[in-house]
Image: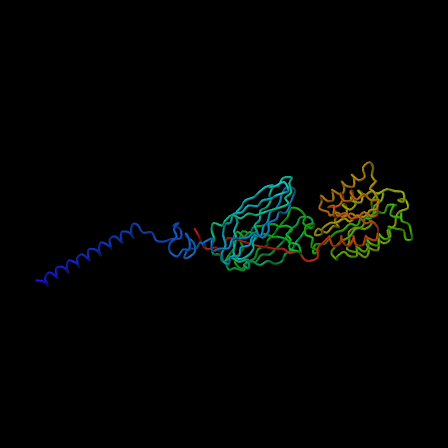
Length: 458
């Protein structure tokens, strides 16, 4: 009887357990069928192997707190025409293999009165290098920016990327027409097996000290895998004056005062003219092989005694033999006419389209021709030169010159030099020689960037 009761109890336990197992299976099955949602990278919940909500772990998207934020290395704006500027900034992304297909930014341009304008945009930021952000033709009206900043918004989407700046190689850089219609030709090679589409390329030119001077941007629709594309960058105004590297040649007009006062110190040979001509000849002999020189003399009127040429020894010899016409002993000084002759020469067919243009004018007297306002006339002619991107240096010799006038005539007040005596002329000409160009080659950065290489993300 006891064994029968035990058997009956055990049967009830087995049946109860079975019912519970079946009920549990039904509950679990119903949950998974109707209620359960598997962990995904788009469910706005931190689950699975994620380090934060929907990022890192098994997710393609990278968590922002695991990434170094991009840093603005520098930002600058460059005048392209009156009232319009290009703005460029270099941004460092030091994350290896991690970038963003869309980073928002704001360029802000300021002058001493405050904010002039701002420009917003969005661009790609590839990984593990420095990349430019470019905005062109920013309108500034009559104001000239003295400061440019770039503000970056927090990145919303960090993704793995296989892109590298080494994917593209540049060759055959050729700068043409720097003083007319600047054009930079470059061959860009795609080292990747796959085609690259919608490639943005920015060219930035630096001086020998690494200071950015100007920049331009272009876009390439596609570059075949292991293929090449010819890229062209242009500027709407001359840049020969901007690029002060000695790699860029210079066309120089030497304007020398031969009015009667240049004999006033007397002596044999007469002074100060003899020392002036000696110093001017030394200046010419210090020009570089690709430069050209022209010589203009002026008194009551100006004369171009030598057109632009590379023959420096001829120019130096000619300068040493210049004499003051006896008719000019009581003549006038027409500084404005000298500027006119200089402009005619620098605008002639002999001007090298690649060369910057410079006028170095020396006088020991006051501009007193033509009447009634000789200085106004001279300053008007000087302005015409400067408006045409010609750099003007002026030298006032002795104590009778009007240095305020010469400072106004020069491109900047600092380009007007006072020489109390002829003994200081040599150093002044050497200073001008060093100022015309900076030793060392200019650097040209050609940096492409593209959305290619980023991991797929909805």
